[in-house]
Image (cartoon, rainbow, N blue to C red; front, top):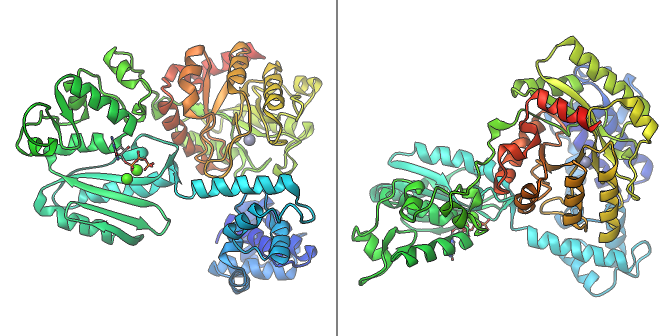
Length: 589
Ligand code: DGT
Ligand code: CA
Ligand code: CA
Ligand code: ZN
């Protein structure tokens, strides 16, 4: 195990011990150990592990060093396995309920015998939780809301995770004998932020279909085959994700791909358009509506118009090709008819990104490592925006540390070590009253290139208060961009309540960019707002919010969401070249 994995393990041990009611001294030793480990340079860690000198450092007691050694060498720890085995899975699941930490869970177990989210829902509904010391009516209501979200979301998966499962399957399907074409369809292809199940469409000869479904059902990770026929199959993976496979004759492929890409609303609208032209559109083909027989029979009788691909299908209906991500029944057919579809942003349009963290706050890689990674991606620039001082748990930077970081960034640029230019920014907390985390004198002295302003505290303010708070931050002359505008965490937590129309208006009026936070769990501001906001003149920045070098790649999720929001390159700030970005920043300062 590497240092990060060991630190995560120690952190988990601390949590498990807390759940068990161990004394705080002991649990803190593990949590402190995790932090000390994270603070250690990777090189030093490796050297000290080799030399057996980790114990010489402050914060690494004998017991801790022993456990780190075992994890480092073998990736396993009997102590952990035993501890974990003592705690029911349901209790572990309780840790995922928003608003619950180890202490509260312990109280719920001891006083109400709650050992699972389901049991918690029951006692909340019965009103028993409100009476416990440290809980109250408000907490009880919050827990119920969190539980409801959890249940609603349990069936969906982040787009990023679903894509990671689907991509190798498409590759493997294409390599099977007899497979002419294979694509992932459904919500994944439409770049929806969460995906219910995967849908694969394959073109192959009927004689090969059984072998293909056989491979599909027998592939690694399949826990259960939920349906199986000659040309169809459905499976469930161990992750809980399900997948449907459909095999069609090659002539039918474009129609099937289009049908199973959806969305349902888009399909309904397109079918109506076909009917108005005397045709019936279905997964089988595009056949004349008149005459005897079902659409399937007509298609099998060879009555369908031919379409090699979806572009030809759309052309039969007098439409330009509609990119899958626009197929949500939100006016894309009208736009395609009028030649009004946007030239959507592409991943290659991005020249860099802002809002990235380093080890100075809660990132896992240093400034130099982040710059090197950005250079490897071919980026012209990289913006560093670590946390500000109020984000204490993220080791936010006070004025002095930030000044030192700005100096380090200037020195790095001057040294010319990397081809990628580094901009000095900060992710500045928006305080509960809308003020920023540094005063005017500090900002003046720091000479930052830009400032991302974000909410990291007091999420529970009412809509009015939150809206006023965000607008006040946007009105601050130093604000360049608004970070993760609603604070939502997909599948886990709703965004805070805020009047987005007013926030967007203020951003446009004050020339503040709003980020599309590209972290796969955020994708915030949501794609549903971007089309209109961009028409009004809002500028978007696709920001990975990277906490390590690998996190920079998340911009792809942001590009997907931006495409879904009808955005073109000109709507996105970080498609500008270095000179263009510099100009914008200097005009704003
Ligand atoms: P998901 O899986 O919940 O994230 O969403 P989708 O869009 O992938 O939905 P899914 O897997 O149920 O079906 C894939 C596509 O197949 C869907 O987007 C449209 C098409 N489809 C499925 N059922 C129907 C239906 O009853 N009517 C129509 N018009 N289309 C359907
Ligand atoms: Ca699906
Ligand atoms: Ca499906
Ligand atoms: Zn943030």
